[in-house]
Length: 261
Ligand SMILES: NC(=O)C1=CN([C@@H]2O[C@H](COP(=O)(O)OP(=O)(O)OC[C@H]3O[C@@H](n4cnc5c(N)ncnc54)[C@H](OP(=O)(O)O)[C@@H]3O)[C@@H](O)[C@H]2O)C=CC1
Ligand SMILES: N[C@@H](C=O)C(=O)O
Image (cartoon, rainbow, N blue to C red; front, top):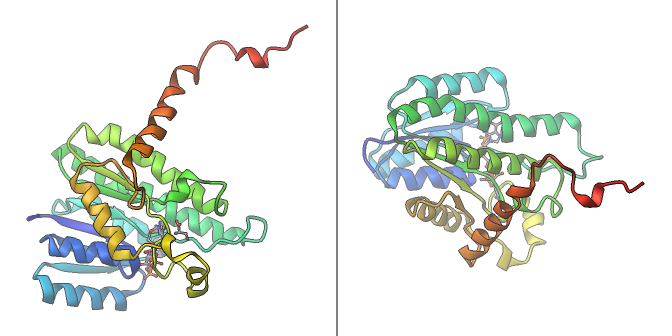
């Protein structure tokens, strides 16, 4: 990859930091965004030294309107930016009735609103150019809302649906749009105690996860589930969902709902 500049959110740690490393090794210049400037600066210095690419750091809290607006403006106006990885996200919610509603608002602001507005900021340029890359990090919890907590999986289901819709709108214009659904991945989003309580064969190392996701991107996959052993299972799921379509909107209610006098 040459002449690419990729903006990565949540690049100070975990999955985002590994994306930064991998894109730098592919020769892409980087713009790294997160709240912790010191961690971003340390990563940037190491990547500049190891790869020679240009790395810029922007400290921003994407759950805050003003900071988000700064990054939106950059994505909208900077013609050099050819790709966006919407990776920043938080989990950490308890049961729905126990979790502070302000925490849930913050999660929605970051996991949903920031992803939407940053995508909206870059999409017109990429679409007009007929090129570029948009990677949205969702989660396997998007496919199992009954298997985790309430708001986090719902936020990730939003990102999956949103990304699939963008694939239709932007994909036809030459923009690569990928949804990545990691399973449990060894990062600081989990406490050490949480990870210790999960069977080891369910936990993927972060480098393995990102390398698989990038392999999926290179293959042109619209949806990548790094752990899923058989890609045919995802295709079958999508086909079953598609098969519902003809019956989803009809003039008449289904016979089972007709009240018989
Ligand atoms: N690890 C896992 O098991 C899985 C993770 N995911 C998803 O992957 C993505 C990355 O998570 P992961 O790497 O595991 O988590 P980490 O906690 O390791 O990293 C999260 C990153 O997001 C940044 N971030 C958090 N809040 C904000 C904010 N308000 N504004 C800007 N940046 C922020 C953090 O940086 P800083 O604190 O410096 O702001 C950090 O760089 C998330 O969207 C997560 O939902 C999906 C499935 C599984
Ligand atoms: N990020 C994880 C939960 O905390 C997940 O998506 O599995």
